[in-house]
Image 1: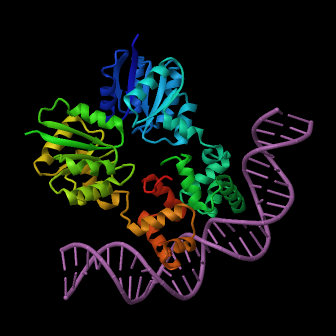
Image 2 (image 1 turned 120 degrees about the vertical axis):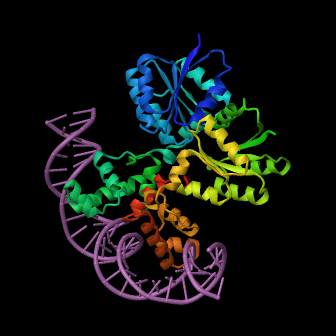
Length: 209
Length: 209
DNA sequence: GTAAAAATCATGGAAAAAGGGGAGTAAGTA
DNA sequence: TACTTACTCCCCTTTTTCCATGATTTTTAC
């Protein structure tokens, strides 16, 4: 029985590349592609692929969120994350949101086929590079645990607000904001605000708006 | 006479996609690909393509710099920039460094063929989106033009260094670093360092290390 | 219901950044 | 050659962050 494949990616050349890589595979049935999250969800109303290859960077929605949505509605569909980055935080979040695998865009045909076949059996697959990123020692890659309030303060700091402004925004004292700031610096092991923001951005903790 | 095409891109799927898009074209001769700048230059010693499709993000060298180098050594080779971004600054710099065209990775086969044919005749080609980005007034375009030195300072700031430490690292005066910092804040329209780093990260101006 | 974690607030001082000026030199371009 | 750009350097003042060291009150979790 052929595995039905669907792709969500906004880059035509990548879609064509994957299509080309898979077109001679007998046990693969190409169902087509979507170039954004909305048309992916629309497609899924009527058609049910076995495996979705899903880019993390989509024009309308975050691939990580789309993964969550799809998995919630259609738990039987297996999802493989697809991106140019092998950053631990991306991979981790994708897997947390129900993805069964993660492949980099410089993967070979072999890797891609291995990923699809493994995932189609219900198992998990991580490309070598992705697995390597995940296996890094705890202190090198773990995102610190921050509280709800700290996250709020962090976002406002990154927006360029001073402690005073943040205090007024959140209706709390300046000294409280200062405490949160200090705790953030400690948790992220950052020397100052600049380093803090950089690390937070790398860990994808700041929404892009 | 067939146009000889060579590709420099570190994403196997993109290479495969382009190959697939071009394989049925009669007047295209596929010469192969390189996945980094070094092997591209090595290839060019013995072989001379007519047109090179060149990714902007390469593992070893900036595509913009590679473009300059190639054009300097082999002025007869036409180069088409290739990337996922249609940011004005990228396109502009690529064209300044001798590229004859710029195509986004979500281009269709038609666009790609049009680009190759146009460029092979010695003319310039910009994809619709790329041309649009270039035509935008400066203030609408979000990527400020920063100098080499400013970029260095920016990177060190984002690493958490103080003006004093940066000064010692770059062997310049603290006041000079301060000037660069002030100019960066002005160019990025950032209220403080935190906002500066966030914007720089969003614009992909800080290497991930 | 108690213990832990989170959120709140505070003082005071040292360090750094932000904001306002001005100015000279070197290199490349029109 | 004249002009522009990048890079360099300096002064002064105010604002903000960073650091150390406290403490009290809510929430949350077991």
